[in-house]
Structure formats: structure tokens, C-alpha cells
Picture 1 (cartoon, rainbow, N blue to C red):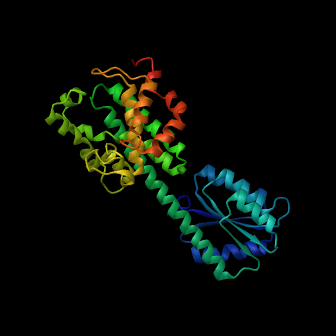
Picture 2 (picture 1 turned 90 degrees about the vertical axis):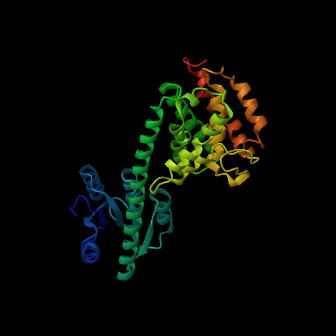
Picture 3 (picture 1 turned 135 degrees about the vertical axis):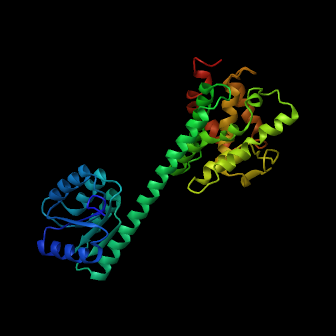
Length: 345
């Protein structure tokens, strides 16, 4: 592994003998896993961080003394966090300075702090755990980026399928993604959930690639056997996304977005909270967009009429909690509505 590929551990202390001791101990224990760098002041450390970032060298961990001339360690770690948010940090202090530790926790997301003089075993254990934690997070993010690329590719493929027209389909899947994220925001879900549902909601109808085009464009005028074939798109989508490396949320959205709160949906007949929350959210977003979008076989509902349908479906077709969040964020949803597009009727 080259120096550029190895993560960096940066040690900062104004006492050279302490710095040399740190560097020696860490190189002996972790030299094969990480690049060990040193700086004798906060200013030098920031300059080195800038150089490493410019070179594309990952900075896994910074160990900094608290009391240093010019710039204290808590201030330094806060500045480094602004430049390199993924970097973990450890504060080394020989003082009972709780205010500085609290400052480092609040502003620099302090990973740990060690008091001087530290025990060698404690130091190595702390650094090793931090390096392992950072590496795990980077691997997880890399996997997430890979999955996102795969998802975007699948969304693009869906948009290019001639369901009604490429343009209509593309707009629909993007709006359902936007609506789903807005509804999830109204439910106060965590940021990672918001990001994922905004992406994966666009895959809700990917299984329609397995449904004959002539059935898709027939719209509401399905014959019984055609309706049965149409319903199978959720199973097709679920199978397409049921693979290693693809977020389970994507499969759940495709497979369960036509389930109903009262248990009368398809294809599994799930009811209530047995339906994954992401599918319950997409169900509302999908129906609202379907109602407010003109198709060759139907006119678009007005937003008021579509909202009335959603309200009436609360507790029957839809999770009441999701409907409440939809209504609470209705103004934001209307901004993305098909009825606002000059190309829609």
C-alpha cells in the first residue's frame, strides 16, 4: 500500500520529546496500517492538513495536546473538523480542563481524550480502535456510494423504458422520490433515511419492465387477466432488487408500495405496521402523483381533489401517520407537483 493510500495519523504537540515518543510508539505498532505524521504547533498542523487534503491523502486521526502556544488543541481539532469532517480526533491533556474538553466534544466531535501521562497500552488501544472505527466507516461509505451508483443506473434504465413516454416516466419517478423525502422529513426521520428514501422511492415501479407495454398503456381499462399481470410488477421489482449489496429499502419499496393499511392491497396482503415504513410513505407519494398527473386515459386531478382522496384513504389505504405528515408538508409537495408543470394538463 502506498503512502497516499494509507490513512494518516497526525500527532500534534509542542514538546518535541513527547512528539518523538508518540511517533516512535505508533510507528512500531501501526506503521504498516497508517502513515504517521507530526507537527509542533496548531498552525503547522493546519498547514500539513491542507497539504494532505490537496494530495488526496486520507486523514484518519489527529492526536493533539491541549495546551500549546498560539493555538490550543481544542481549537485546532475544531478547525481540522471543518477541513476534514471524517477525521477522528483524540485530545491529550495534563490538565483538568473540563471546559476545553467540552469545547472539543461540541465543536470537534471529540472521539476520546487521554490524560498525561498516558499509559502506553491505553494510547495504542485508543488509536487502534479509532483507526478501526474510521476504516469501517469509510468502507461503509464506499459501499453506499457503489449502491447509489447502481441505483442511479437502475433509475435511468427505468426512465428509458417506454411505459407511456420516456419523459412522463422520468418525471414521475423523480417526483415520487421528491414527495417521499418531503413526507419522511415531516415524520422527523433521520438524515440517512431521508437520503435513502429520496433515492430508492424512484425505483418503486422498476418491476414494470417485466409487464407488456400494451398492458401498461391501457391504463385503467384493464381486463381481469391484464390486471393480474399488472399487479405482478411489484413481485418483479422485488426480485430484481433482492440481491446482495442492494439496500433492503429499495426492495421493500418496489415489493410493498401497493400494500394497504387495511390489508386489502397486493401482493402480500400485509396490513398496518407490518408494511415497511418506506413502502407506506411511497404509497402516498405515488398515489398523489398518479392522481395529479394527466395520462392519455385520464385527466389530472386538481391538488385539492387529490388531497381529498388521500384524506379519505387515511386508515384504509394509507397509514394515518404518513397522511398527517403528507398534509403537514403539503405546500412543499405542491411545489413539485405535476400540476405546476406547463407540460402537464
